[in-house]
Length: 128
Image 1 (cartoon, helix red, strand yellow):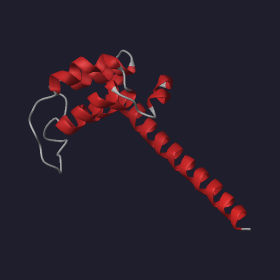
Image 2 (image 1 turned 180 degrees about the vertical axis):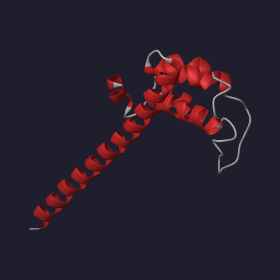
Image 3 (image 1 turned 120 degrees about the horizontal axis):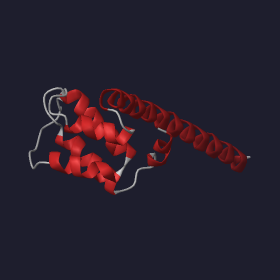
Image 4 (image 1 turned 90 degrees about the vertical axis):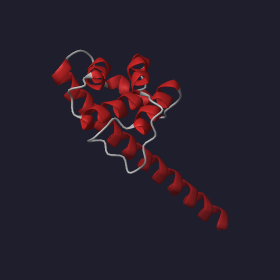
């Protein structure tokens, strides 16, 4: 009886975990798609190219540029590395970060690491 209860508990746990992962991945995908569609409407080109153009546009709002930096990290395309590396400075900012006032170095560094490394959701962006 205990073994059967344990098996059911494990199945439920795995199912819930996979469901939460899928829901989170979908929310992230929708955000990345929204930011990249917005960039494409303003800059044209493909999603990655438009996000890079937004990141490099010094006249764009910091909030939009920071969102584009985050989206590029999620997508994981190596074409974004030169633009992100240009923004990576030794400046250290303290949380809470204000993405409306400056480029957030934490986001830049995290995006660079994601592009150079592995993200579990990178594969879903081939459908952008």
